[in-house]
Length: 226
Ligand code: GAR
Image (cartoon, rainbow, N blue to C red; front, side, top):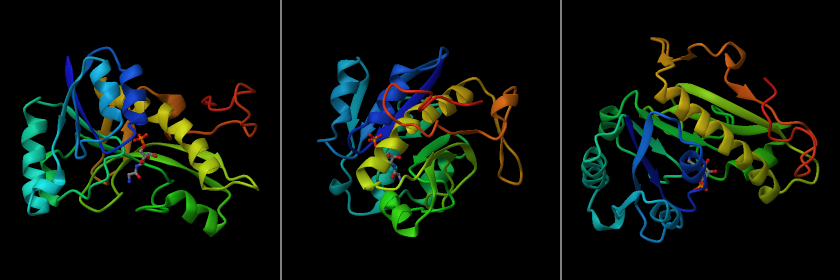
């Protein structure tokens, strides 16, 4: 049984998607937040998952916070650590400690739009396609080997809310998928820093695209096309 620790800072909808869709062979050992008021903690508790808060404000430096956070995580002997809307920049030492077993989801098609306010920036840039990326974490911010991406169209009339909702729906598909691949030992990072998904010929490139009609309940919206 693989042990997974999930880190959140807020709503926790990606954590929720992973808990609801957790692969056989894995258990969510703990959900840890840097904020006591993170909404997602309620869901985790209601599902019998251990929760913990490591408040970044209680530490004098990033290093001190990261080492307390790592101690809380390591108490659960995790095979995988999942950043699910965890809004703290992590130190290189922390990232190296979890090298090859630290996943993040970012709401853009990386390497486009690392950082914050991705949906607004995508709208301002006038891109026609936007999306989300699950990647292994490396020391550079929102960078690292890409496991899976989901693309959505940017529609005329979109605002930040409509675009982020369309992306989030697919985040909830690709993150559980990436976690499942990891738990099944199907992910390999090549020396060049690319991810190979073993025995998944149809998802070789690790991408999904929804149908253009995004009316809820209509067509194949949100369904993988591969
Ligand atoms: C998600 O959209 C996730 O991609 C984003 O924060 C949101 C968290 O929502 N993460 C980042 O921006 C990380 N750079 P959630 O708490 O409902 O999962």
